Amino acid sequence: MNRRTLEILAELQAKLGEAGKAVFQRLGLAIELLQDDEWIAEQGSLTDAYNFLQKEYFGDICVAAKIETLLEVRKEFPTEKEWEDRKWDLQTMRAELYERRRKDRPTRTRTNSGII
Image 1 (cartoon, rainbow, N blue to C red):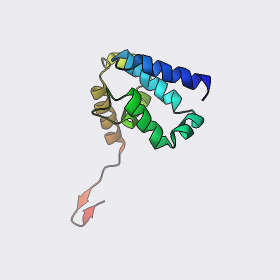
Image 2: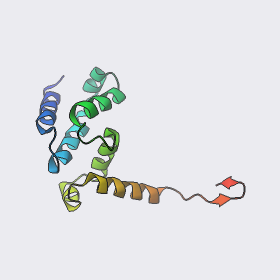
Image 3: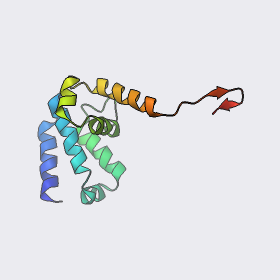
């Protein structure tokens, strides 16, 4: 395990249980950690890495959402300003992300023979 990976894990541990800005920072650290192919291999697979992160470092906020969803929120809202504007509220950002994606999906039309 490289030195930066150890630093990230230590930072995640230190911020465990903190809310607000710390959640933004924790998710950023997780994104950085998931760039480390060696660390992912040590976990077994990407799914195992997600499960490890969720259990060890995000259990306090992964009650209502999986770590993958939280990481999507962090990627969709990458700046502290965006999070601060939304009062660090994950549910608000999840809802906004859902609406953005819903609008991006092609509309389907119901006909007598089914959905097109």
